[in-house]
Length: 227
Image (tube, rainbow, N blue to C red; front, side, top):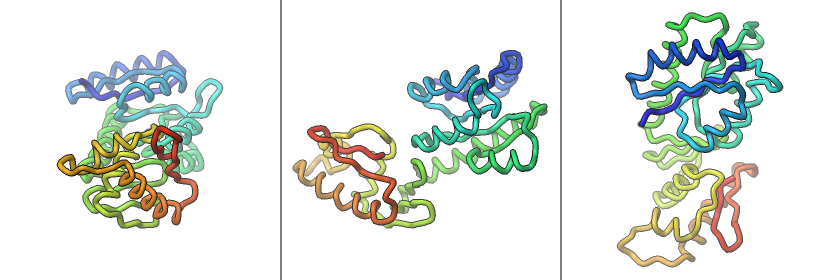
């Protein structure tokens, strides 16, 4: 199954041209480029599909593409984003690069756009091979058992690392105690739900000591949720 590159642009002729050229360039490498005429269409894809990369214009009808980028990043989507925009002033590019992984100005050369997409995908894949998971302003380096909240480093135990990995891979979802027992604890050993409560309480204290905005919430009679 191909990975998806979303392209958001409300000018249909430009969108069709981008889709055609990028599909010709990336289909053979396992990517499918899908065009969206507005951010709402892109949001629906994000909820249902694994998205490898997003291209987004700044000047969308009724919405600044930059606000869309902020929204998905704050919602925890770990998706690389390239802005493709006619806003070419230095201040516009600097502002965009605070949130996006790259900034391409219109009109653009397709060879350059393709090269920039390839470069961003390579950087992102490198993070994946290093077992790095990102959510909002936190990163988990699984191999090193380190959690980074902005620039603060938190050393985790192997158990806490596995718990945090489950939370970050299922950000926004409520995970039951039984889910953690099946996916985190040693299946050969009999553990009780209280083991989950104790371990998550310890992890929660470590995180909330450094950042009050990132929370592990208890959901009554259901489990826990990272938000």
